[in-house]
Image (cartoon, rainbow, N blue to C red; front, side):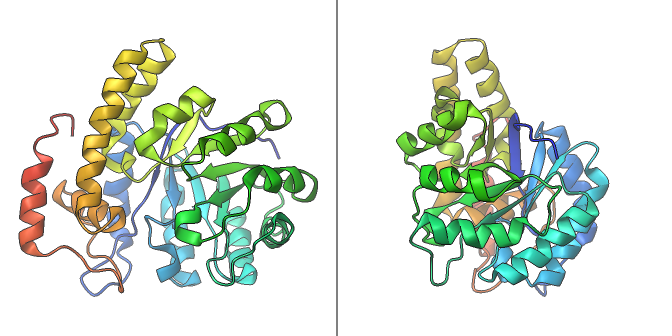
Length: 299
């Protein structure tokens, strides 16, 4: 297995559903082409944005399979995390069998591990079922409640998990993130997980990012990355500021999971409603959101 760092933007996809809250995989062709045209490098399936823990394993497998025809144009990263390592391991084995580029799992949100030893042991059970597939730990303490130090996790995981390739780092602890980037002469791929601070991640040494808003904001962020790589920091800061305005709108409507699905619906990608206990926007909220979206001429 060859470990390579991801460069560019990865969009965490929503899970398309019909009006009854069941999977509607027929939308994925239009959705995939929409993302390709907007310049993302890959997709992160069945993560937080994809309402993953509200789906059962069979639904998650079907969704993953539906995206694989686009693996020649998009990197396919599949979130396999679950509160049970056995359920996650089943998904990991399936992801490798269908040819996913990488897998990832967040820490269990029930009876959360407190020590690196516990978290590494949990992830090791998952990763060993996909021994030929790069493995990313999904660090999102604000959602999972797992607050283990990531440098400790990398230090131990480096010895215990042969396929460990990096971390999807969704935390505002920039000191810890930099320590992880620098670990073992920058040998691990630390993907920046907060799109509202992508520029910070680039400055610290991250080469790729995974963020919900990239479903729509990727053209703007690609310009930001280009400005950063050209050394035009003032322009990069201005573009990050514009991106923050968009994210402020995104989180104004319930939360980013609800709003990004609503935004995609407005943009013509019919991804349907969110699944309970989440509540989709009302018709009035959708109209107001559509009006507010028009302020962004790059959409």
